Length: 120
Image 1: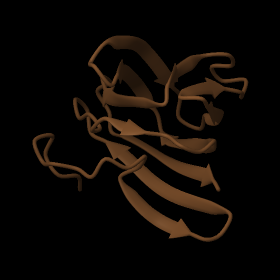
Image 2: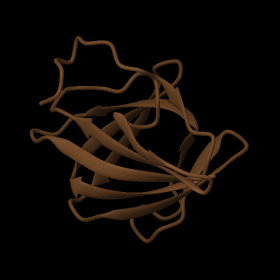
Image 3: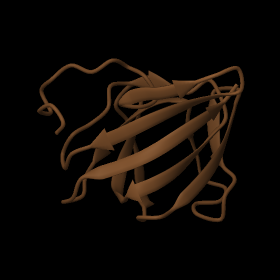
C-alpha cells in the first residue's frame, strides 16, 4: 500500500528502484488517485509499461500545467531524453514532448502503476 499523499518521497524517476546493472535501471512507479510525484529530472532515455493506467497531469518544474497525458492500461511508451526535453517515440503519444524536469499527478479515480526501464 502506498503512503498517503502527504508523505515525502525521494525525487527519483520511479517509486522504487528494483534492479540496476551496467545497461539499465528498472523502476516500479505507483501513484494513488490524487497523488503526485516530487519534481524530478529524467537524464536517460527510457521505456515504460503501464500495468494499471490513469490520466496523468504533467507540470513543469515551476508548476506550469503542461497538460494531461492519458496512459491506458497495457500501454507501452518509448521516450527519448535529450537536451532537457523528453519526446515520445512510440505510437502511444507519438511526437508529444515534455520538459525532462517535471512532476506528475494522478488525476484519475484508480491506482496508477508502471514499470519504467532507463537505458544507461
